[in-house]
Amino acid sequence: MIKTEDLTSFLAVVEYGSFSKAARSEGMQIATLSRAISRLEADLKTTLFNRTTRKVVLTEEGHLFKAHAQQAIHSIKLGIQELKVNQGQPSGKLKVDAALPFMVSQLVPLIESFKRLYPKIIIELSTNDSVIDLLENKVDVAFRVGEPENSTLRAKFLGYSPLCIVASPTYLAEFGTPKRCTDLDHHNLLGFTNSAHLNNWYLNDKSFSPEVMPIANSGEILKHLCINGVGVIALSYYMVREELAKGTLVEVLPKAIEHPNRRESVHAVYYKQSALASRISIFLDYVKPRLNLSSDN
Image 1 (tube, rainbow, N blue to C red):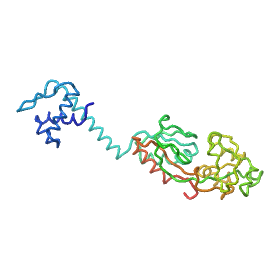
Image 2: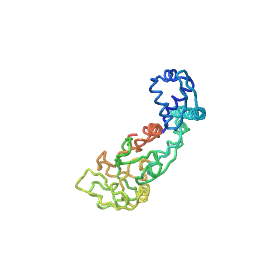
Image 3: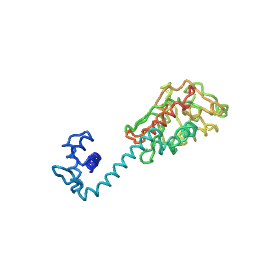
Image 4: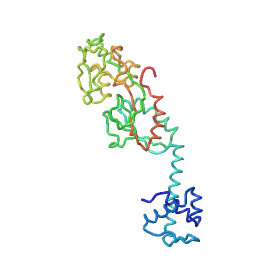
């Protein structure tokens, strides 16, 4: 494979017509430059210069190759310049994935203001309630609630969103408000069908384990079932913040859950060697201080 430095050495000899002058201009030893030319000629399987004790002259093949070498080096320099420009004004596509509740409540409200600051970054949003393969789904960065398990991904900690046990006022009016953890035995406890770890409520009372009824695979669906009086659910605060403020949901047993726990951490994950690192960093640096994950925000 032809090396860029060999092309640069070749063009320096063309420009100065001398190995010694070309070596000085490139800041290298004559022997090093000579090896670069020999290596290039070997790669091309042709002679580029006719060498005498007095001068160096391009062969016909050397003349033919000169224009291509100049174009190649020019293209590389243009690419470097464009990268430097992009580093000053980031550009390109950034595909972002999150569960629907997180996307709607946390990220969507920030997109318009982010695009005002970075108009050349094209944001593409996707939603998945389950953990997806980033490469297979062509996702650059994903937001995940709970401890990340994939060690091949880089994880940036964004904060905690405490678990809340909630129910609707109409449900509580009919079935009563639990006063202690064991009272939950007499209630309809709603759970996830596809993620068993999300059915762990991390109660302080370790002697009691709530028996949940898996009924839906989406936190958003479970929330709306809860609003409609179907039962009681433990969800992240960011998901129920607005409903608690409006009174359509009520928190019960506010001191029953241990904090923090494995369901409460929020991370952004992406591949460690991602070529999009600057775009990802810019997006995460913008998003992190603007998230509303807990009542302390």
